[in-house]
Image 1: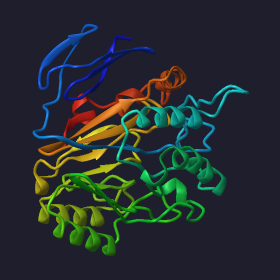
Image 2: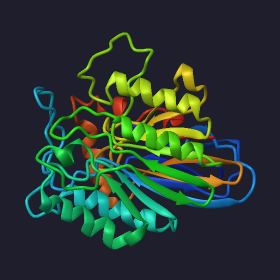
Image 3: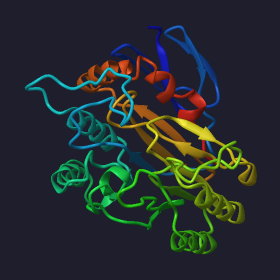
Image 4: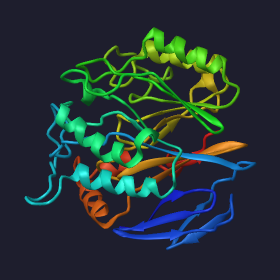
Length: 332
């Protein structure tokens, strides 16, 4: 396999060659480079001081024991750890915690699918990992997996005030269903929050939006329903300080634009639990915000995520990894 340029920031590039990690620091912003035979360009640096950093994870799936299962489909392979090895959600999330600690985040936000089956024991595993590490810096909201059998995780919405930015964490879950929604009261809450805020607001939720450009308008769309997606996009179009929407759920890195909201990114970030094994960092400057996706790079985590490249007939990386513009980019 050829080396992969996985991450760039305004000053750093990271190239993975299998389980070997090559990190290059102190690079000039907005400048072309070539390392390990792979060319790229650092991100522009927004103006002014760096005000804070915060981190997100999603689809951490504590309690999961089989990876690659899609209900109603038999693509394979189904992967699990060997007897006596630690569960892979613990391996991935413990390593993510170590990496996130290193940036001294102002907040850590887990945007759903904290558990595999929505059981209290699985939720306690999540809290023991992230709550112990980050205390009152941790904010989290349920995903569809957390509500299949009831409600074990906090409901939203939640406002998180950070230096230079406000994070609005929505609850997009429909209990006991896979699909998502944004109820009217949350749309009103978000509209009001944006109206009283004079700096950028980043909106986070578990489910991704349906695109009005889609040729199909299905009530069973596996993200936020078309009707509620339309209404959420309308709020963004009305409030220009809503500067991006960031979801999990799909287990892939993707950025889309909607005609009604111009250059506002509608973002999906890949799962923490399997390839590429991701967490996302947001760097908030006086003059703008960057998203920097990190691939978890401890040896044990990389051994697992290299195995999970095999999922879905070996097609998973094409789906989940995305292009560089889907992973690392200028938000605003």
